[in-house]
Image (tube, rainbow, N blue to C red; front, top):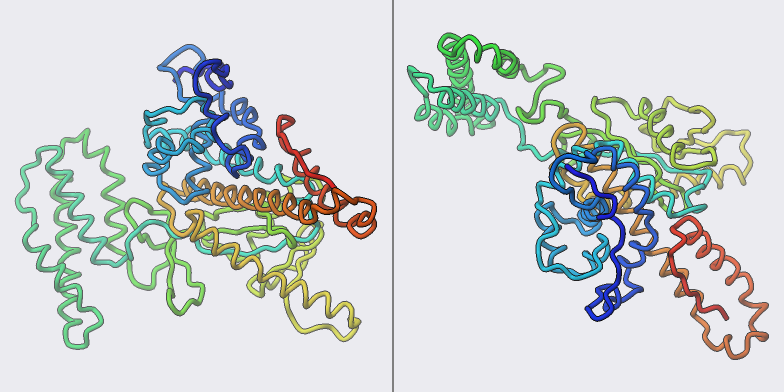
Length: 472
């Protein structure tokens, strides 16, 4: 695609036309975010993925990044966020529009291509910007660390489902290359599918086992037939697929490194001990948040099943990459037993207090471990409000991008909440504006803290951010 830097710069305001920004509420959360985010940072970093002199004109980078942020901020799919941007003027202003546009901002597939273009490094850059906006609030020396399951959008895996999908794929392969099959087994597969439903029935289990065995026999027969009848140059292309299908058909219930999905083979099974959901299929995700304000500093998706203690090195390294001060303490649950120190970070776990501990040390440790539970509802909000509950993106790269964008949406939501909370508290006592000397001593501590907070938020944002604070 042809990249035009001028297409990303704000257009000139109209003198006689309708200016979109002049008609919108400047104190709307999306308008505040649009002025606080450093969009030029994304344009400079992502310009390398475009051609300077070839291809059709590219969609502005700010528009695509804004749509990705809105998707996770508002919990929308690619199709719905594009349609909502067409209908919502605040969405268009957030994505850099100056005039209201009645046409679609882009096709929903453009977001998929853009994610593939920037990869995990681009998503990490967007996430780092959300951490930078919090300024000194993200520099706490104590953090909370926890892991959760990032479920993949796959059906509940069973051996019969996988065998039937393999048979359907082989039949489509034969039809695509005009192979004269001896038999497709379509009618028999329908009967066997019904028989496989009774694996838990006492009297019908034998029939279900026999049906599963027959499905595997049919799949092997189709693989052998295609190997014989496909042309040599085409059979070489599908050789890896045939080996993959044979591996799936040969799986046993107690095998390790099993394949649970044909289109997502990297998915693995995780048992977290939940009564309502004993087994979950996806990838393990580790999250680091600040202890007091709940700002997410790192979010890592693990491609292979690893114990929680083996995730601390990677996730703490990612957290240190977006901040300046070292992390002194990391509070974890009992699932991280076995690690006491990672680099310069002390790992604190709940447990029986030591005899040599003073009363103050026991109370401090108890408060820290009780406060660690705050990361649990944080993960719940990520899953239910910011699309972390189920990943619809392809592969392990899609897992990491979805996790980082969900964490970015959470940080932006926290920034807006902190901004409005500080602004509201500063204007609680309007009478002090008429008689400031009477309440100056009473509210001196409050004004000092809140003004510091607002100035801290503003100093780490764009210089163009206009913040008018009604001081007493």
